[in-house]
Image (cartoon, rainbow, N blue to C red):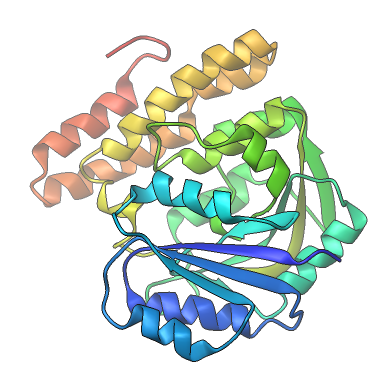
Length: 300
């Protein structure tokens, strides 16, 4: 089985990053390589990696800050193995992650995406069950017992109604991602854009219910910190309307309709309006409401 390439584009909390790295070191299947690309300047980090003394771990520090998409692109350029993971800097691989992915790839060696089972945790590492994650599980995610191969317009429609994936836990076929690449001018919704592009290119995804990853959801993430301002939904709406035109041209009219409606994004924006008001972010509340009430396909 091929070595699993684990890419960690790092910026932010040192302790959380170290916990993420330790979770990789604790894998029961040791056939992996970890590449960390540091986009910050936190003191002591290069020295900590040097002390690990594990030839499966590579560490690089950018001379200049590249930003989210720039650092992901640099990580992608460093990938050399057939399959890879863009791990979150504050997430945790359960000890069976690499073994689970290898098992799936033995059965589906040419699949472009693997989504294993995920447990959501909070900032303290405790299991968490937010409204967003409950909606993902109950309303949007397909019902999977064991393993299931998905693809085509059916999967695109499902994800455009509500993105139930956990991007940092997904294993990708490296060649497919390098061919497709990341879209410019996207940060918050870059993950969904990549998946939809791969589906349009004819690629497939395996979903497995074996829990192998912990996704950390807390208030200091990029997506959460921009929520009350409404910027994440402005970016999302721009993407959804652009994607709808491309999907129509591709002949996927049901997917295009789901993209124009982007109902789950509208509902999520609506749930944040009271919090924006309580925080005194009046401009953010107005932006959120515009994204809730705007007519699909019409410019604001």
